[in-house]
Length: 269
Image (tube, rainbow, N blue to C red; front, side):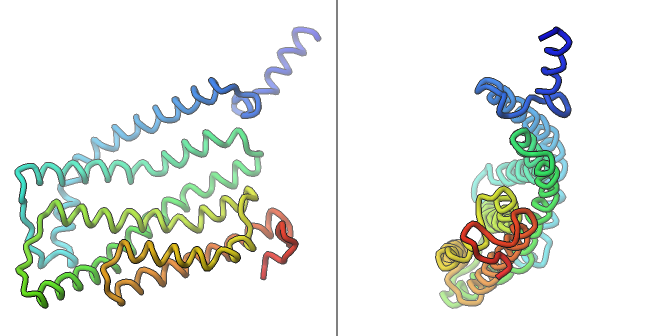
């Protein structure tokens, strides 16, 4: 083989954008690539954290004056509570801001193992995933949280307990309620992605439906108070989300893998 042919072969092995295909990368190459991706995420996080320090105070003030918390007396039971709330908001704000960066770096890490059309398809999931995360937070804050606060207030009145809320406890509870919903709302896009890669099928999702329902009921019971109305407001959207995911899986499977799944059943059923 001539030197020119060797050079041409090396260029071909690198593929598009000068990247070596995943199958040609060693363990050290993977480790180096992962280290570089993590470094990029950390760099963006530091920049976003600086922005979070400026956004924390107006966001906290907005949430304190919102209808959900307008009538709630907030107190600091520890000397460090104000600082803790401020730092928590700065960090969480930074993490939310860099979600697209995290998703893109994750995509960039696994994309060499995908075909060119798969790379384009999976890249389109990033903005969808971010919007679904925000939708989950909005649902839990504007719809679920008022029911939870109302239930807690009624319970306190029934037990003749004076309500006195610590600001750190309130915002910690707020994070515990909203962040999980942001993650749960990723279900449709995750199912779409896994179906696109052939990892799951519509028939599989239908077979495990009763187990999935049970798991969602347990999750709803954990993050909601023991009150029927609040439980229904959480459970019903989660079940609908699962059914939407099955429909999305069927459409995706039919588009990329033909009209039938691995079990020979019509994916449109």
